[in-house]
Length: 429
Image 1 (cartoon, rainbow, N blue to C red):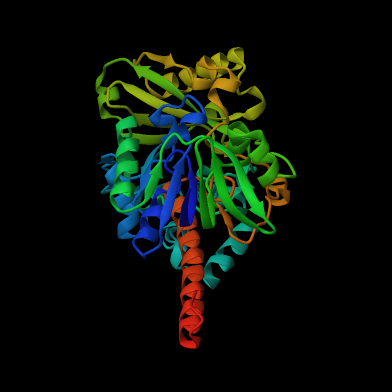
Image 2: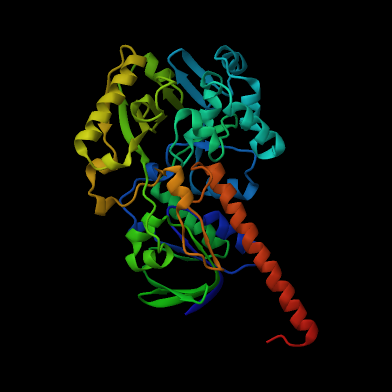
């Protein structure tokens, strides 16, 4: 049996920075990783479609957590949006001109770049834009939509979550299985007790507190717990634990991000494409299916990963996935004359059965269902994962983890103050 101040149940790298940050503040931390039990996912699937925005809200230690895992390649012109009317980039030498030409108001760009520093002004702008026609607000709605875990109509997206920091320096992380192992080794070297490939048998709850995780070969006790799995991931991990933590059931998604691997024939056009860019075909049509494709060049120069949002009900329907692949080819072929476009690989859902793959990693939920969704409330249990983040990209994930660290640090300070009072009274156990 081992006892810790904090026990973090982690998957796919979630909670690694929380563990590293807390152990640096003198808190004993155990990180229990269960990634191996949640499906056959490639590193690219785990990383997701969003890229790595070097947002202003990142701390040095958060950047270190990402840098320790795998290297990143900077996208020269930042975020690139390719409309039918032409490309718009956010950090290139002509970005100001391109934004103006596209009719994108400066205050929308300023809102996206200064979001975290805004308070009252943020609300005023959102109220103003809700009353304006979509033709004037589509760009700020897109910034909110791209990383959102809320499903919404194009013109309603700014009502939810936080915008992606599209004006920030932008990079592609070259993720690998070795990089994930390095991240675990990094937190362990800092003093975190890491239990990899842990088989949790049950959780122990006393009153309104979680007190322990029970394994096949032992037990880990803690004062505070952080649970980094979604309801659907918890259900796949262990049905009994799912019923304990999510007594009202699983949060079902409307949509999910699916990754296709796209091959392009060698040409001057193919070579000139950015490292990462977003293809938006029709601004006024739903930002789903092949109308919105997020493309990222792989380490092979003529192979790209193409991410699209697909209805969850079609997730494992092979005929549907094949048809979606053909739509992607048609959209890209229209943009890339004289380039042969083909689907090199379909999403993992095409290859694996539902019980083998597990829940989608980047799900998008109906806003009303998300608002009504309830987890079990325990005094010493915090949840961190896609269901709780304000957006799905790294900047929002790190913002959520900051709040968890602040909560646990407040608990630590209260405990230290209580111990100091006990010492002063001479009643320290």
